[in-house]
Amino acid sequence: MVSRVIPVDAFDLVIFGGTGDLAKRKILPGLYRRFQAGQMTENSRIIGAARADLNEDSFRALVAEAIEEFVPKDRQDSKIVAQFLEKIGYVSIDATGEGGWGKLKDLMRDGVVRAFYFSVAPSLFGDIAERLHLHEIADAQSRIVVEKPFGRDLASAKALNAVLAAHFTEAQIYRIDHYLGKETVQNLMAVRFANILFEPLWKAEYVDHVQITVAETVGVDGRGAYYDKSGAMRDMVQNHMMQLLCLIAMEPPYHFDPDAVRDEKLKVIRALDPVKPEHIVRGQYLAGGGEGSYVEHSEDPSSKTESYIALKVNVSNWRWQGTPFYLRTGKRLRARASEIAITFKQPPHSIFDDAKGWLENVLVIRLQPNEGMNLMVMIKEPGPGGMRLMQVPLDMAFADALGVDAEDVPDAYERLIMDVIRGNQTLFMRGDEVEAAWAWTDPLIEGWEARGDKPQGYDAGSSGPEDALMLMHRDGRRWREIKG
View (spheres, rainbow, N blue to C red):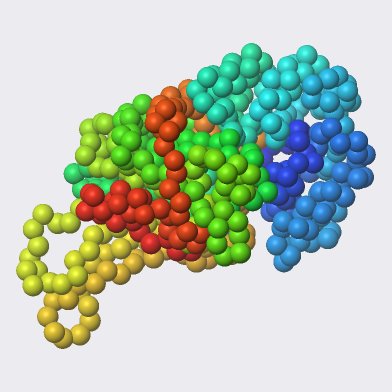
């Protein structure tokens, strides 16, 4: 099965921070892949904007290097790369001054979508937004894309929202969370709302608990000083994992419409109970495997910032009252894996009195690696000797099931940037959603800071701190094994 590619309207996309790491790793290679797939029209353009004193040729060379490094070799075509580079422009610009803005204005064209990607520090959002309007570069149809971190607490998030709202309407602002661009995350909505098989069971009456895991094998070496100011709670839970929880727990929207979907997600965030201190586990990885410890990487031997966190979260509404959501994320764990596991309750009565090995039905949604879903069901073990039950998966890897090469599936950034051009905000966070997430997160952080809680050390390459295991064991449950 070949995926259908629908071209987007012609556009001028300006990437502020066009020479930065994110642009080189994700944005520019992703745009090349969309061009290669035929999704970009001939008269679309990409303009890098940064402080670096480069000319157009030197920036194009940087783009070519990014494609060579971050696009799989078998997806690189010299002829197509050359055609793509013809669409690339560059402006040396001073985000806090006046240099380069006149030139950028001259490059803008009428009759095409104007989009501006703020791949810069949040401290520059206001300066760039102000100058885009001061120089009449942005118009009422323009769109801006802003990267996380969108604030580090409620107060800073409100301030950022106010800065952007001074120059752009909410309908023009696209707050990007790349987790929402993953194929599996979007399929989660399709599985829930397009199949009568699941939706009637999607509630506390039938679901025992939900686990959301985002595990990484890498540490913070090389960016420890930055990470130490955020930690796993701010870096992962407040945004990525919160969004996954919302998609699992939200009510069916009246229509697959951007604001209808985001209204339902907002209701979930507002229904979250405060988390008790005993339902929070924080950890820091220890040295191991030839790598240093977290405190060595953060360069602060007294750091109390967590590289791992596990939470037991309750959603206080009619659908989910009594069903806990267990969240965990961490660095330097056993494997790189992200998944959502919905564990269903056991039947109220078993007719197999002598059956051995009863396990629950579990729907597992894999976000990475090998995106897909499997449903763990009980069957009889083959052979004589009585009714021996065993758990087997009904497995669907999307690339295999659809006959699509995994390398041909657009990555999250590709999909989300094309949604910006289309003007589709469904997979982007709204301002009130961001603020509600911080309003829930802030008291948790303030609580452990006031108590002086210290993270528990855990072995690099393990599944996390011992206390995280106890968080589940106290409830008669256990974490799923972390495996790639």
